[in-house]
Length: 255
Image (cartoon, rainbow, N blue to C red; front, side, top):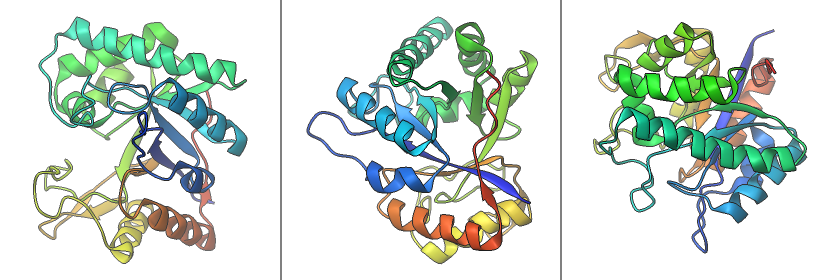
């Protein structure tokens, strides 16, 4: 039987500002990446989101980012390797405290936004993230793009890496995501999203924005929780995978 993990970024509300529909999305996915307060989320939101994930038996991951609440973590920030290492430890440790208090175990880490993109292409950023994870808990999975600097750094230290693809983002010819600043970066059509998910699973490939097919390896597929169509996409994708006989399940914990 085919198997795939469906992950979603959640817990990104902050104070009175609501982002996404976590209660609807949570039962539809197998793993969740919870914001740690630097691009979204606050202590109360982190607590509520962890509690919701535990209730639904969803694997919990930390979703650390650059300290960029105003830009939702999607703006690049010039930071030293040590600063990025410290950011990772600070945010992952904060989320793990809520996970432990909720009687669960942290499963993975997935960098957010601009930090994710920077780590995918920059060896120094990738090394800072991976070293922080190694000394924090080397049994955690790291979610990131296949073939990236992040994957190379993780495998170099023996960390478990889960390659990620996206249901709601388009791709460039080099395998990178189309920047959000460019037209066509987001997939807004449900049929297109479903085609992309099944192409990732069945053909291990996606069609680029220019129309070419490129290889994509993925153990997990992301649906952005803050997307306008997130609930609709997640519902339809989960239903389609179930009907196809694909098991939706997160990678087995190593701890």
